[in-house]
Image (cartoon, rainbow, N blue to C red; front, side):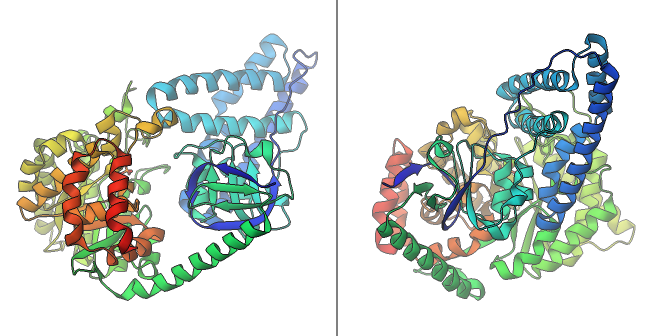
Length: 577
Ligand code: PEP
Ligand code: MG
């Protein structure tokens, strides 16, 4: 009998393959006291140095296989392995209490895990990530101290669906991508770190099934549907046939979409839109041409700054921005200025401990507080503007005053560069991200100064509902299709248009199939989405009849719940599918 499990859809596509179930490594530390303190201390040092070597090797492999962004996920663990103070703290405890290395290390790590757990409950993602890294490091260190083996996914020798309670970033790196048909886990959460990497590798993935490890066994055949979040264990021949058919329809659809690359994004009734790319690394701009992107709607410049020993100087920033502008040719590139703070900490910028980092020094506030840092970035951007169509965008704008101050700094740096005889583009734009409710409320005034807006729904929704975007306990309140969000979006679009300015959306809402018709009918000019979503969104827009959808807006704004909104969209778009 087939078993059907529903979880959270975390990656596209269908996979049919045998299961490879990964056991949980629960190491038991038996011996508490020792008579051989020196021996235990040297075991500890050896295990730390083995862990360091393994992590350095994993870091190299991650970099080769998946690039810089994936490799940075290992950095957090490597930093723990290299933390001399932490290592000495454990040595001191071993010497003081004559306890074994395994027992002492385990106690110290658990102590910090409790602190991170409490901090993450009150301060969100940053501490959650540190906790995940430390937990992963604990397994590695204990495996060495207890002479146990870590489950090695590198040993997988046939194509399989990986089933695990939870995966870590290091597990993903050990995988041979050719052999991974898909991934299913018991636990999940949209912000889980391994997900960032499994998305990069485009594995069909379903998370948060709660019980998959209880129900699945190695070699059992399974189907996973990463688009709809469904897992079928021991499927019937009929189910296998059905899903094989769906899988070949999906690949045929993707091939068909390729045709759209050279066509404009025009709705069935002649309305023009742009579908641009969200990028985090300059290197990703190599994929612009093949992705079908109409420019870049969000370049998250902070990835040039994060996980670096030194802050990037003007010259290295200039080359990175120039690369993206050249890759985009005559299409627009929106580069967002440094957006750190919250869960993206930049150790080189001293920000005092904050009780609510998401409500503290984030985005433009950091740039205004550290003008030299900001001016360096602005100079690099302005110099790069001579090589393409640049749009500079400020993140986390809360007030008109902040926007004006930042805009004036752009003007001043432009003047300095011209005085120095350095070329600056003639036609760059300066715009604001709308992701704080106060900016929505003041959008009419902001639109008088900004050349454009881009709505950052990832943050806007968290601030509208007061729900931490990374906290799974309040995830049910994070509702992109809620009328509260639609009202804020509509108001912002209307304010931009009233001043004759263009407006885009670079938050995840722009990728939600049920939101796209609403956004198109509200008049959003640009959808900025991850590279892999560009063609599907362009294809969806080409089937829409925007004029017929416009009456829907009034009803959607008057709805009470996301479910009502979804039903309205379904009703009006069913014939456009
Ligand atoms: C957003 O907030 O919607 C956004 C696009 O920015 P980030 O997710 O980087 O905060
Ligand atoms: Mg944001």
